[in-house]
Image (cartoon, rainbow, N blue to C red):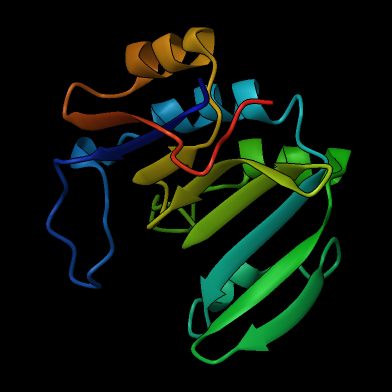
Length: 155
């Protein structure tokens, strides 16, 4: 049986810009998630709102850029430089997560999504080991939903 895992933070800081910011501005889970998923990702897509200029800095030199209405999409192949960006330069000058959405894929198959400034997540076809790891590393105020993938049929 193929299972999908959705999880999201439920406690946030008050933010004047309507961003979802984790309580205590603690993104410690981000590095642990990246440690888990960057090992298998070979493609990436990052979405930024058009006005988030600081978030877009440095992405164009590594990824293809195209605008889609109110947001800009950067996509391409993973590299050591992108791994470094995701693990060392993921916070803006205010200590907030830079990107609205990050999608990691392996051979054009989504392996994990990190959305709403790294406060809402989705992992399709999750292994029990990865599910338990995520439950362990996420803040106590995280909501978890494990559900069977209804589009999956065994052959």
